[in-house]
Length: 283
Length: 344
Picture 1 (tube, rainbow over the protein chains, first blue to last red):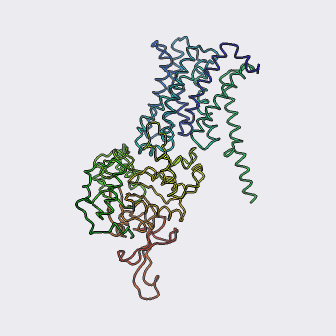
Picture 2 (picture 1 turned 60 degrees about the horizontal axis):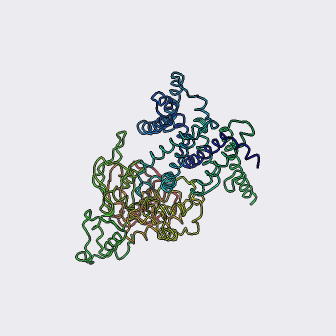
Picture 3 (picture 1 turned 90 degrees about the vertical axis):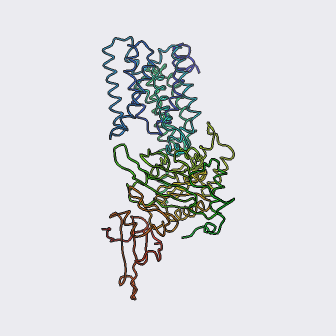
């Protein structure tokens, strides 16, 4: 018990834990969509593309979050535009756009002298967040979660069968962009906690793990959120005792959870499949 | 060709209380009203009086400048099953998309039950049964969840299913005989069962027009018969059903209407008059297998009649006698004859 409570005696640990938990909820929610819709690379792309936005926002004297959000969304929309107006496939276009934007961000970063630390942007600084950051992240969490839960049926149908979604009168184009906006918001909100390199882990792993464990969308959402909360909580506490970097600890725990699910999932796990095959062979 | 007998009643009163509205003038906006019109339609025997699906001068040009469809015209009456027949790339999917309102028409118009395609969508008039390859079968949804998706258009903003929605789902599952599989994940079903689930979704949606894309691909013969039987039932209740298929042999078996398509509509209308050897050759050009067995090869006596077997790599259509109007019958098997020659 003391093992759990001791780290929480420090304010910075409290803040780290709260912001971590707040981030993991919308990230896990969006991860279900990313996994089912095949948007994993989109998450990666948007998270890298925010970098030039952060630097430009600093130049203009506006909050970094806004610059990051605009840049992330620009990447998603530019990808969609190039995909529709060229013969290249979407993942190719995405690779070109986001790596270009990321590289531009790196150049700008060296060129412009900011008070930002590149390390913090890339890898997050969960131990250095302020209550203000916690509040901002909480707002994003509440907003994204509310929209997702209210529209969860439509989002599920959009991911599963966009044609049917259109047939019954859902504005799929609007929904598509709404989801991209939500994705960008979650990435920007996660930046402080996990950084733009590792954010992709929290945006994919929970959904991937939950996907292996269940046959229903609602359960998948719930499991993804619970797994993300558990890994974040454990990761924050563990990193204190191990004196390890917090965000990578969380991500490693999620990867371990994925391996466990991959091997031992009751219906889809590799071991279960193996034993099924053996049972068939024996017959 | 069998049709519900009550549709072939030329003496039915088509004026007064049973008068059908002129095609295209009436806006139907309630399921009750739609049902009423279906019944009127059936009782009056006015087969072509009320248009189910119609296309007028439809032209679709893709972004890259290719023409998907050009000046396509056809009309399918309500209470009918219509086969959409053509080679791959002949514009079948484009036509389906146009009917669903997904395709920008460069010219012309599509109406479903008298309403412009896009408009009828919001009212759940059109249901679509996708090809099996189009569906992500690993998606975490159960059979009953998929059927419930057909009800979303009837639900409110939050899409919370009402008691009626649950009843309609139960009913639809029973009609396709999948009620015992309702809690299965959709990937755990056979090809025919998968198809029936999506058909149940169309039934639960209470659409008047049902579009099926290659419903018999990857489906066992038993399921195929069950699906055909179900389509006949739906026809009897006034639905208009459009089936795109390569399964030429089954077309005369259950379709009373045919649309032949190759970048434009070559011909449409009653199966007997449209689904002919000449028309099929026109629609398929060289991409169809044709076998003609006749005279000495076929008969011991001096019967000069010949058997024509036409196949698009699936169930073949067998036309007995050169004079195709006399008789057409089914080949029971799915396998096509070996050693056939391509059409010139």
